Length: 340
Image (cartoon, rainbow, N blue to C red; front, side):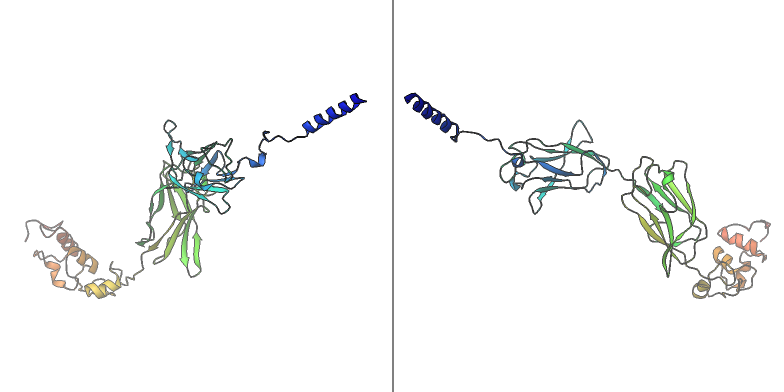
């Protein structure tokens, strides 16, 4: 009987010992206590990223703002693989303290490869509860290289452009000719109804860097025109598929129309206001030379007596005109140089 009692007592001690909590036991942290990266923007290996990008990283926990710095969050330019360049900028936490935004001090380099590194462990980014990153992705992205315009004609806000003026745009690199059409290269005419597209023909210089546009119809006098180039993947692109960063557009206006009633080469308004000649008479002084020719030769279109100003007695207007064009320092072409 005593043996049975002792056995039961011993068994109770064992059971009691097995159920006793130990203050020295270690419980592994739950997965929810680990600081993790949830999203990244731009994502790893992204291409054609805008040069104005501000990379964003989101976490599963609130971040301790004192640990957000260039030690825990680094951005590097890897264009030169041998010597990566650290990018300067500022860090911002959003209102929930779970998202870090990095704003570079300046636009990123076109065509360059960038890498973002998050430091793990207690020396890196920590949550407010002190959790560190056990592992973190290093991710790369490539900034797009834009198609650049070198020069265009007519220029921005050009005035008095002739109706037959050439229209062209020169790029820094060869363009993909299949990307240029009436939807991506537009010439528009302004009217009371707004801007309207004009039809025309597109051609290229041999090197493929300059585009020429020839309107199907002659431009109008005293009219406002606009040229639009469409950007993006569906717009004008280079042969390497580099895109325009924005849709460039510029305007110009054609020369005003001034009537020349007598077809002497002088506008009516100039004949009245500048030369005091008759806008309805091509030869105001009736000396055989029209008003414009006399002005060009330095003669007075209102004085018929200057028709013999070379003192040789000839009144042939062609001789007189040539003589004055030659600054009156020799005989008129065709005349006897021995005569007075």
